[in-house]
Image 1 (cartoon, rainbow, N blue to C red):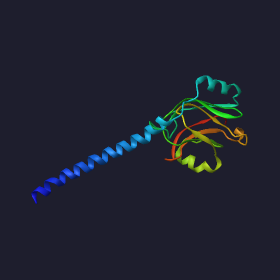
Image 2 (spheres, one colour):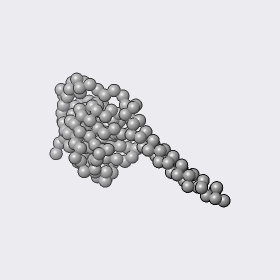
Image 3 (cartoon, rainbow, N blue to C red):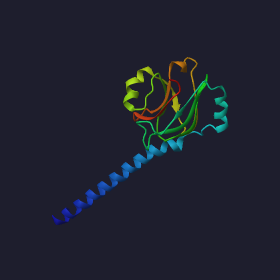
Image 4 (cartoon, rainbow, N blue to C red):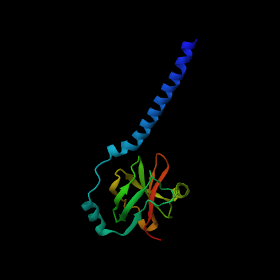
Length: 164
């Protein structure tokens, strides 16, 4: 009986340590996988070329209400007749989407409240610089804010207003 009792704490410790390792490994995989599979970001020259026909521009900033150390964006975006470009840096993460919104939002609650009025532009697959095509059926004049949202985890990343 005493032999069996001495194995129990060791079994509990091993189970606990392996569970912690699996959890840390899974979390690291979620964070690192998007970085590892991200396509090459457009060069500064390509971004600058797309800015030549800018209709609107704005800023992403780390100081949004629901941005935090793991969910943020910082840099300048531009909207022209056929694309939205970004020059700056985003915190890496999975399943980022770019939206246009008719109201300024900087929290998850506000995003969810107004999501039905927004239009999803496309996937954000790079974390520094991007260009996402803009459908000719979308009129940026009808919106005032660009938002980056993590669809998988329902997490606000950043936003920037480009017109009042």
